[in-house]
Amino acid sequence: MKKKVFLLLTGLLLILYSVGQKSVQADTGPKPSVVVDIKGLEGQEYWVTLLAKEESTGPYSVDGIQERMEYQEKDVNTIFEKIIKLTRTQDYHFLGFTQNCTETHRFEWVYYPPEEFKIFIYLPKLNKYFISEDECSKYAFDSYYTLKVDQNELNHEKNCIVIKKGAVKRSYDYQEETGNLLARMLFTLAVEILLAMLMGFRKKKELFIILMVNVLTQVFLNVVLNEMVFLKNWQTLGYLLVEVGIVCLEGIAFVKTIGSDNSQRKIWTYAFLANLLSFGSGLMMAELLPWLF
Image (cartoon, rainbow, N blue to C red; front, side, top):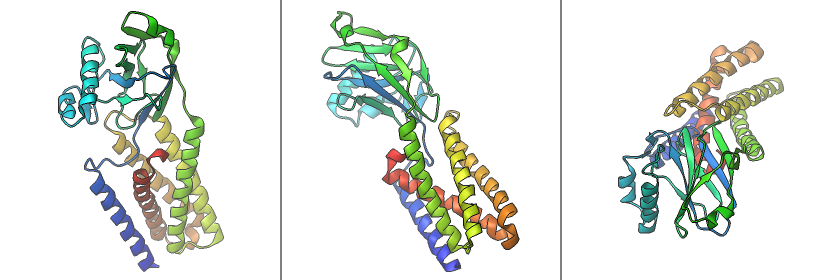
């Protein structure tokens, strides 16, 4: 049994090393996101960004725009230069991240989006731009908005079109998030039950309790991550603190329920290794299946 556990953990370390090599940032854990679905601009070429109240977030900043432009294609830099010019007098800042949403009609900022922002849309062929009148913000770990644009506005001579308050609405995607949550939970449960069996927890009662406790803690983990917007630049620490809390909760629960048949050392070792293994395999899933996170 010890040999099997050793091999399993060795595999985990290899996974972590591989993921670490792919990510120079060494930024682990899930990341908040802001997603905006745009309706009404079908048939138009347009670019979308979020103008931030702050001057930097994660790798994006006002001061870093010129450096970012050195590694981009000329046509993208042309868009950058136009957005910079159009937003120069705004109180909110362009941080150097934009997407061409002509085909997808969906804007996704999935890596350190700004905390407070205004939605900005630029139509290069018409040389017009939309900007939201009111400030928006991250309201959940994954924040969804739907923006409805009135195409009649494009017929006006003015090049600046203000997006009124009622045109921007929160639209949390419960169906998609629930499906992703269930997929992540099933994967995690399979990994942790396999480890439990390898460590000698094979009685029906033990496996049932381990399964139920893990279901509860996984629901708790995902709800906390999904509903709590961690303080800026503290996402990874917040995630790790939640994980530590879950190790403690699971260890206590296992000691009280299956402790009579197993040593406390064995139980706490399992609680720690199971969460370490699920964390490592979760990193691998985030690389291979990023749409689940």
